[in-house]
Length: 117
Image (cartoon, rainbow, N blue to C red; front, side):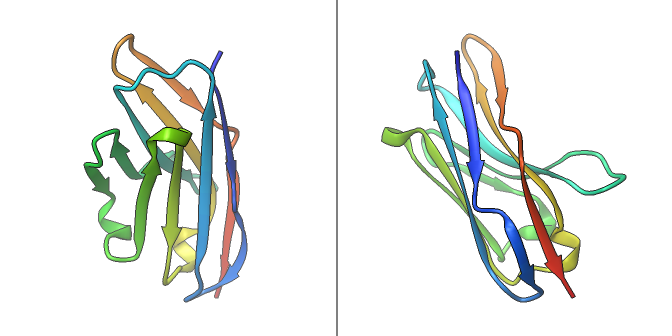
């Protein structure tokens, strides 16, 4: 059984910063991609950033240059450093662990990020 738990959300003013953390526990195969998704009210869940176990990263265009994803493989932990936050970054942020073999996806329950203008 794999559990994924996020932390670090909160309320911040525009221009501020937050750091999200996500810990995955249980039997997790090394070939995986850890990522952050977000869902704003009335919108579909979208990819924010992802990172492979080898450190290759991918970012949504809207967060490039402002957000940085990183991970600690030994701790099965992924981080999202969010700087220069904008009101449009508001939403529930979900951590995802995508295992390549055997194929599986694990999700956390999400953490709320609210950016006030």
